[in-house]
Picture 1: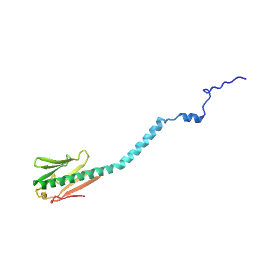
Picture 2: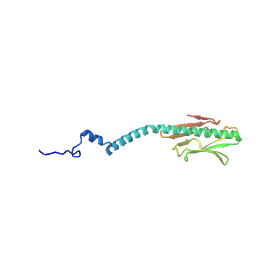
Picture 3: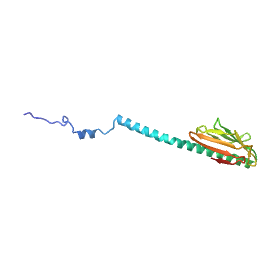
Picture 4: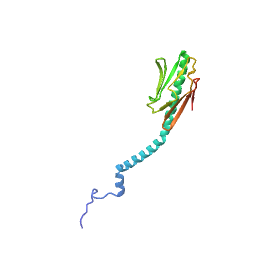
Length: 159
């Protein structure tokens, strides 16, 4: 009989030990997980876009209403005519007294579209609207829109 010398290196390791030695994840497993996360993120984003549009329109409508109220207050406080100019193509609303710009709001960066029945609204020294017709300002983004109506008396209503 031959003497057999048993070397630990030559002996194959049991299956359980081989599995324990492999502690990492493969590239294929990582790609599958990233693809699933991407699909979930796309679904969540698609559902949240209308909410983001509604929030942007709500904020823009409040800002425009505040500018109209500010213009009315300035006309009353200064005893002079104050105008609100609506630039629908430039997506901005500007409050001015004579050649002085008192305030402005830029809506282009937020992708808010403006539509207006008139291009300006003026308040007289008595804080009443000057002109014969109401002003209707529509602010829209995506599927969401908000309407501001300014009466001849200068009151702002949101719908």
